Length: 450
Image (cartoon, rainbow, N blue to C red; front, side):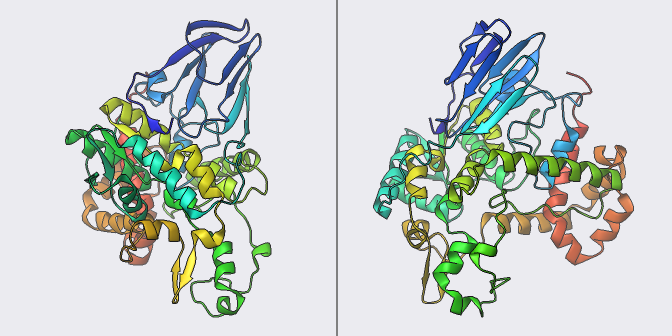
């Protein structure tokens, strides 16, 4: 399944000690025997299975809202939410709720009476490692798009990837331009208004307009692009020595550090966090980084990038919201055949340098009929954040003075006010500030207990 279903969430309760199903049906891929529950999701490329221990049993659901309809402060991990504001991702099996865990796609989780273990199994992505022509990737993507283009469905159009999806959907496909402030905040998931919010806005806009299905290009560019090392090889060493966009032109690909956090910018900690706030964030970020390093396959290159993309916790929010609104969400970038076909493409099939112009996602640009140069989603989010900060003085002041994080001793009001007086620091941290203000409001409305 490559789409978020609108059918009710599936729940199940098991007694792990006795190996007995108490209520409901086990999710696909689950195996239960006395003393152990195995959630084998190695064949899945989308959707999470959530679980928690409660009253001597383990509760399972394919949607977080089915386990915890409304998050209370007692259930939330404020440290995890703070890390999400700063661009950090919780460990593979963790959520922003203290006692609720997840089995993401391409993973196997063994749940015992007192704990659990998680490992990555990406065999589905590398099952077919043969080199294929670009046409095979286009056909696979087209099939995934067609599966989502049911009656009254539309393609959410924003950047190059979604325009490529629109082209694959055919000339008569409906298009949907999301309204950025369409809403979509709920009682369970913290609002993070950037790339994640783009899909949220598309779903909210679709529901408001009576559209019953949305097809999005979310994460497609990540899988279809060339990375920095591959691009350097395409350009050639002679050009690398003079190109201004190459930060370290003489560092070979073999000497480049391969971080586990594919396509995720390093968190730039804002100066207005107090020492306790920074300490909590750095400790959690270090633990999360170590967990992801253990989880992702070693020396996997683009397979690791695909695993990182497909296990994004934000997809859980999208699935919960799609189900609540009755809108089917389809992500062609999560279709197994499409992912496998994209991973089989060589760097020269994915990227190109033509007449001095770099095409880091040549396949998508050709499908989108070479749209005019435009900022990517991240740049659009940063620009919008700067504009928001400049017109939201009252909201920022309230956040700094009497917000949830300020009352918790995690925010230094004087440092924040001083940063806002510096336009360079304002631009640098605007996206983080907008996230933190939105999440702070959300935290302030949470009940103390469920």
